Image 1 (tube, rainbow, N blue to C red):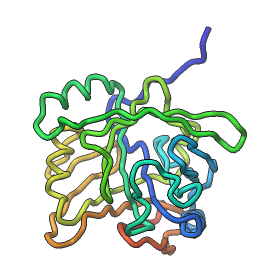
Image 2 (image 1 turned 120 degrees about the vertical axis):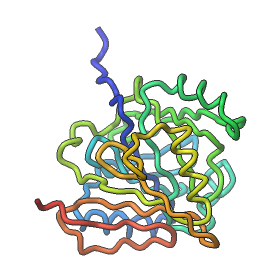
Image 3 (image 1 turned 120 degrees about the horizontal axis):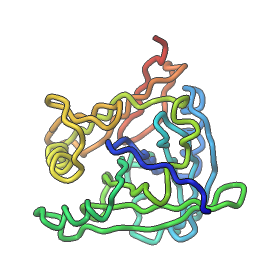
Image 4 (image 1 turned 30 degrees about the horizontal axis):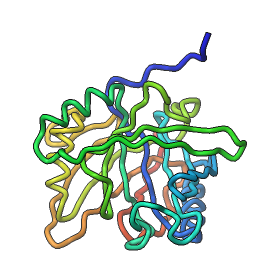
Length: 243
């Protein structure tokens, strides 16, 4: 018999947050997050993408990925590491049926270039992890959002789902916030919560600010909230997990 694979949550939760940085910046960011109370669980390499990452578990089983290039220019798809680094560059949500999501997107305007991406990463102990990412629009520019198919490859830190720091809120703000709000409502089918959306226990809010490049602020409940993490674009905001 094969290994038991837990079913992914029916309700979307935040799968992971990607921070793009230089190697030096990645170290400083990881140190700041660790001071706040997160744990560096794995240093991994994704050879096909030319990047190395530090992975830090989040409540619910998701994680923060702090990514940098293996060497200058090693990322093969343009250079998203070139501008406004370090920055929060991606927010992904879980899906239990990526094929159904892709079929649904095919009927929506503006998704003619939707794509799926499969990849792998090698952990410090030599074992492999895998992912299937679904993009309603190609992951270009400074900020992008996605779904992660979790039927075959479960979230990697489910053993820390009940103990790791939890994301309380995601705030998307800037001149494309309204566009991404429409995409979230039409394509990602997050749970409605009044004027806001919800991914698991986290609220997802949008603030249109013309003339400001679109950024993401992530609020996390941690043991030590009086920590600053240096980012050029977007922000980590900490609140106390007490009470």
